[in-house]
Image (cartoon, rainbow, N blue to C red; front, side):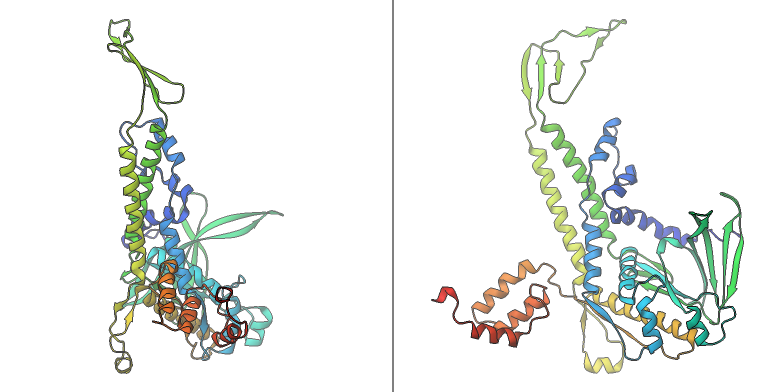
Length: 458
């Protein structure tokens, strides 16, 4: 039994083990270096040299770029708010979070966090409305519902009944004024329950949590929405690109080894063989000091010789090949989100219209994401008593061709051979972003015919 609002559930701790791998990857080279031995093990013979190896290690951002590229695909075209969305909600969507972000801009971060972690959360909040009785009063006072993004790392625990959320706890940091000019950040735990909320703060650093504030709202359920990309259960998920993350960490480690060995073998070692050994006070031979570096000389006792010793380079070639193989494996792991899958239809009507429709995992995520956004708009409508909140349509690019430079030469060759029309080639180039969508084929064809023969045809 615990009355500590900051305690985490075991399910949260299990997910944080996944995020301990992916979060440094999203943070880049500096975050990977900060992770230290957790993601870059120290070898038994290393001491101070490990710190230098870690300091010089650099990250190939395969994981973070894949997350970014896949998110960009989902938002290749701005999302479309349905005509059935109430006009008042459409106006709110232009500043959906009370921070100047419209629904489309705000949604990019919501989706990216969900794709990265396996899930992400948002809820609809409403400022205190004391003394406000009508919608006109709300508009005059600037009081209206707005969305709040809650990142997965913030969530501490929850309770549910029959698959319905009955309580959610998450940690947040709020900024408060400090004196005439300063500001301070205060950590607090927010607890949401149907129709009410509470916040807890520490009286002093490291002290016990105590109730700080509380209030009520007009809803009978928690206006909370969870977007899943790798759902494993209620409020739990596994990052869909976790295997790519592990491959990227492996590349980080292998690249560090490769850079280290290149640093060593690029410097030939001058060796003088035949120097008489020295002895310490106990009469024991003192081993020669081993140095690697420009201008350094290493003594090795034997018959006598002086020469430069260089590495054969075989390990370098093996390391380079291993790194190239890893890059190929990472590319394949990231592209799996675009591989179409057979999807069972949802309703009898769809069964008649779409027999065995093929959808990629990314397209499925985008469809689910649109539903989550619609649910957020519904909660906003509930606050205002506007009835149905309407729908949101995602218009992404889920083409398997994620490397246009590979497919375009083939398309051009097919057009030249008469296997596809020039109009189809024009359309395919527009779809890949080679030609702006502002151009129209009929207009371009008219221009081509009016400009006369090409120079090569004269």
